[in-house]
Length: 462
Image (cartoon, rainbow, N blue to C red):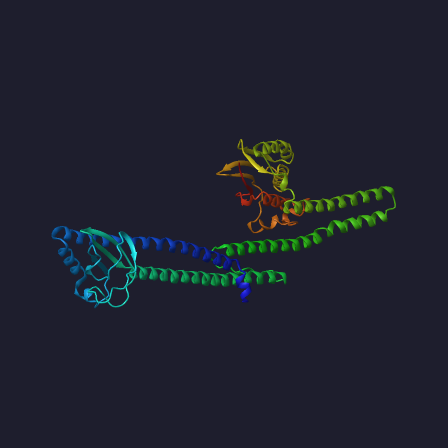
């Protein structure tokens, strides 16, 4: 993979942003910890110095200057006084004239209170002279009586070493974390680009005509899996629409051949008619055939408009209970004329959000199918009820029903059962019902009524 593609991926950019954020927070944290450690070290060192000064002062108060000198010598030890080892503690006791009385430092200017001291070299020949240079000392100078001056200090190299190690540790940890962040960004970018390339390859395969290709999902449920799943569902929908288009084209060619052939035959007969009555009769039949053909195209256009959501803007809230009650009142005499018994069980105060005109067309188609395609004296029952948050409309009869193997097929355009081919119709009624149900995101079920057919429509209620 070219490096420029890797550096321009969103995952690498996010990794770089988070690495910079981490680096900023690490610097702030390092400054805070450095200040806390330095303050704690300084406080601990000064507390230790104050304790030593207190011990020496107590000796002076008890037995005088000689006891103070003895305490200092005990604190320093023989090795430190002889200069054989680098001491941690530095002390100087001077009399009122500035002459050193005890300690391991050369005479120093009198500085009272906390002070940062860089000791000057001792005068040659003095007992306190120690070879070599002295480190920087942090300590405290006090007067202990009779003009005597006492300074106790500690080497600051230990504090400096701790601070240096602290900075080094922070630097290595920060560099390691930033490096890991960039490495993680590179690895995630490689994985991201691999899956993106796979999606692109699948899309190119679809463009080349391999419509069965689908995007392989990783199974992690991440955003790329969700995108791939959405694209796969879109491709399934496109494939279904293309198959539907192919089927519709074939069905139109097959189902329109009969009325168009009959229309041509009637026109030929009209052309050969010898009397006005024969001519008028053939022309009237040709008009009926033309009307049937136009009704087929009108139904197809209506289904296409519904499937393209062209009617979605007509959605509104309305009472489904009132609509079904009025529909039952209208179809009661129609059912009686056909020798059927039409009954209903309509729940009150059920409202939905939908296209009132289209849903009315749906229920009209289902009622007419139940009345037209069942034998005489077959009862038809309509039910409206609430099921949890859903609304169920059921239209059931005890007629011949639809075989289970053909219940999905009858929802296609122009598909008709062999028992219905002798009755008038175009085979588009249930296709229109299915399109309206899909527009309303409703579930359409064709069930066995034992015997007969039960058609259920599950809608979202209010």
